[in-house]
Length: 326
Ligand SMILES: Nc1ncnc2c1ncn2[C@@H]1O[C@H](COP(=O)(O)OP(=O)(O)OP(=O)(O)O)[C@@H](O)[C@H]1O
Image 1 (cartoon, rainbow, N blue to C red):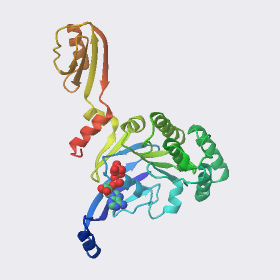
Image 2 (cartoon, rainbow, N blue to C red; image 1 turned 60 degrees about the horizontal axis):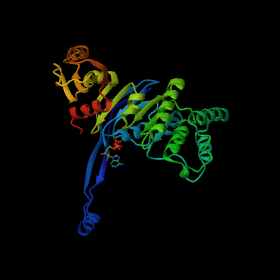
Image 3 (tube, rainbow, N blue to C red; image 1 turned 90 degrees about the vertical axis):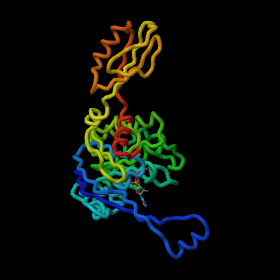
Image 4 (tube, protein in one colour; image 1 turned 180 degrees about the vertical axis):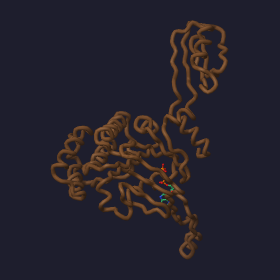
């Protein structure tokens, strides 16, 4: 569905210096630097996939999304989405995609949300029956009934984001590009947005490309991640593979009957200890969890044991470290 091949994009940025003398000088002679936002990016995405497109600040995520949605033209490489080249065939192409930029609005600020929806219906030429059925589904699943007659500027961020997502789906797109869709949302709104993304992916088979810094979004939604850093593609694979590579550390928390002596557990490092509770870290590449628990039960009378996997956030930090991105 999405074929991206050797994409490259540079920006020419004017150097700004401080001081009046330099400002006058700059009127006659400007110095520029070249920022390589993307270098040789290639990937393919199949229909119905949810892909997390991640990377640190300035990595090139938004630039890629802008190229894929036809807003920016790359300097090198090709991009074919549903057979279209986004920036060359924008008008027929945009009928098949929905785009949400968490930081920007596609709704008209001063008019009620519903008026924006009606305008989008006309812009995309959505047949009346399709529009009505999409609208009622979106109002119901995104809980919009209380806010669609309110002007956008009076909505809270969470309410606006739900309306933005609805606006991007009124024309039944096959692909949805989401750039930071949960930025600034409270925990309840985040969960609602994630749930909705899952629903449209499952029930309507919408392909989703999601950029986010929120690793809970990634964990909840994406089976595959594409990591970019400093404009280059660094990792493309499943979260499962990432876990087996970087997620080998487990944390074991044990509660036991009061025990005065400290614990000696081969293969585990003691993170904290008290006469009633200990927290240990185990690298499963070097020791088995069952061996560590057996060793513990020989030394203390266990009351409770919990084993926690490494959070995905930590794994991403390790990945950034490996590529010297942090
Ligand atoms: N219009 C522009 N003009 C000049 N430089 C730009 C422009 N757009 C992006 N850049 C530069 O290109 C690089 C990649 O930017 P991009 O916005 O794609 O990063 P990002 O991964 O989305 O970052 P963030 O997570 O901070 O949103 C950055 O160094 C940025 O400063």
